[in-house]
Amino acid sequence: MVGRRHDSREISDKLAQADQLAAKGKTQREISKALGVSVMTYHRWKKMLRSPVPSMDDESDGGVNGGSLSQHKAGSEQLIRQLELENAQLRRLVTDMLLEKLKYEEQLRARQEPRLRRPEKG
Picture 1 (cartoon, rainbow, N blue to C red):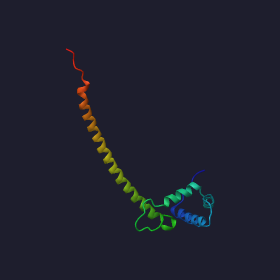
Picture 2: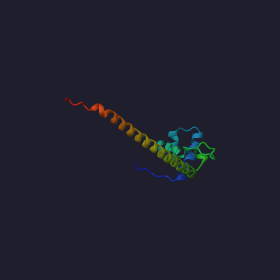
Picture 3: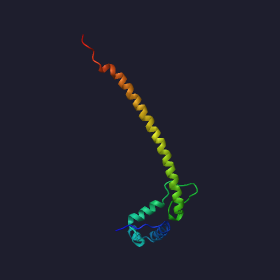
Picture 4: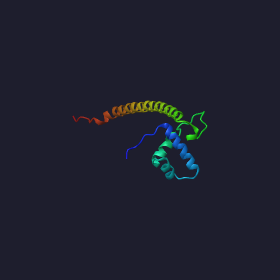
């Protein structure tokens, strides 16, 4: 079965409909069937709309009622920038640690060299 791409307007409309069905006590399977998507797609859409980093001006719980896709996209772009900064810091830390490790290995080799030589019998 070939998948179908839904635009953001259609996703938000379907998720609003899903919220109404959930308020009526429908199960996730029944909700996804009513929306015409799989349960996994329904979960992915809900996860996509949850904000990973809550902003100061967003008082919502990250659901459909709290914001639009453009707000969530801006939040994810901010998260990506934050993660890139954190990755750069971690790379620097790892590089420093590797340089320190090499320095210690060289010192260890220098200490062990005299022990490895055997005295010549004369």
